[in-house]
Image 1 (cartoon, rainbow, N blue to C red):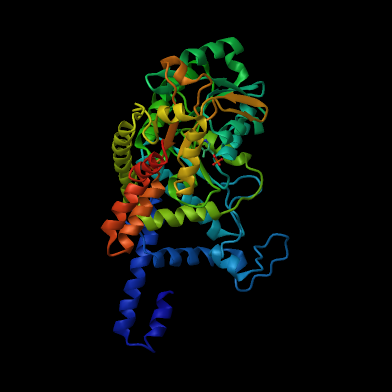
Image 2 (image 1 turned 135 degrees about the vertical axis):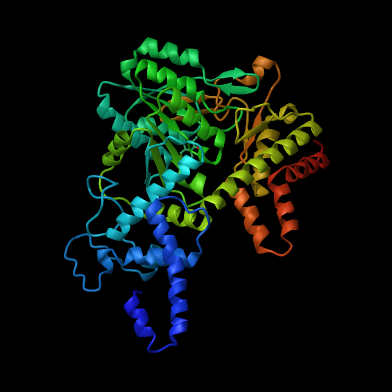
Length: 491
Ligand SMILES: *Cc1c(COP(=O)(O)O)cnc(C)c1O
């Protein structure tokens, strides 16, 4: 509403009331003005009504919502269902143009603005979560694996002769397939055991580069966030190697944004060596539906090149979801969630360690992994392998999801490649080295858990009770219950 409308309103309602209304509206508009001016995630959370006001203002700028619009083309933002229109706040045109996902769409000023402002806000978040010198990023409506593929396909133009991608092993299928889908041959570098930790084998990386020739490598594809006992790759050393041999470096930072340590590794890697792009999942780091990722980097031109590789227009949904999320959390709200996750991780480590001890097991010492923990299951294994597998299914039926029980020596074939000891990130069995058998159970105290706690704590009057209960449930209190139950049955 503009000032003319307000003065007309004064004919109907007392002007002092209208002025108050005008001021109230200005307070919303002030927040929107700051957002557009600074392009940063607002410190404080926005109310849902400010967010909706903003989104409605964007939508009326798109041609499908023009009152006199007569669209005669094949793509005019037509939507048959009102439900669908509302689900997308009437932003129907998507983002980008046929040649570039970052380009402005003439028919859709509102959606284009949404795209630009989201990328700008997300860049701010990447900076304040630890990658201070990141220069450019964009949200892409594909999950992490496909986004990695897009990075590899872009590099192909720069290195047309390259066949291989050098990949320190991580037992996760989509990042492995991202290389195959792009048409490259992964050169798998097995990890080395240092104490309890599985770490990047730098000597082997260098040996492979020398053996196959640096020019034949499209890039090094490293990983930060992963399940223990694997720990984030030695990013600094890899980045230095990449700079030395002039090989591009793509980092899979799938759920690393929630950990300042992972973000710090990327920042340091780029400072001392070479990182061309790093990719993170939207759903894992921002609690939005699956289907989006952020591709970011330190050279604006390269990131632009990747965004130009995307053929056609793209869905605006992931951008819209992450923007709404960040506006309604605010930078402070997001930072608070990160702090809670960290605290919960410490709590979980303590409890899991005590639990392991009670059962003659131990929490593996993996200090370089800031997200995931692993404990041994030797005694369960001596009873039978079935008991180990059964633990996994029992956790599942008790609604604990995301924990992984890794039985001994599982073989898994992914697109023709066989991984021995799948899920343990190592082809040899760790126990053979130490002469004791070990299975691992990994657990991620996810950000999701934290927000679940917060919600419960805010929502209910007996919140403290519920908060405590939930903590125990996702921490260790639940698991001892499981062991007791098994004990009664003779374990
Ligand atoms: C989640 C994840 C991926 C990507 O999975 P998408 O389903 O493509 O998002 C890749 N690598 C790791 C380590 C992951 O955790």
